[in-house]
Image (cartoon, helix red, strand yellow):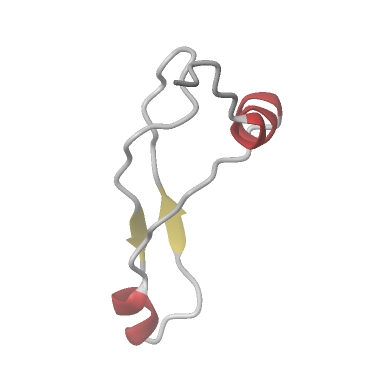
Length: 61
């Protein structure tokens, strides 16, 4: 069993460059409303040493 898993992409993007990886968003309803511009807001939890966090994304249209 491997226990020394590294998340190089997460470490480089999130920890070193502040670029958040957001996956599995269901944007069908947002696309269907016909708006081309909106504010996207999300606040991931700050978990020390973590490379991921649950979040609730919000689109302000």
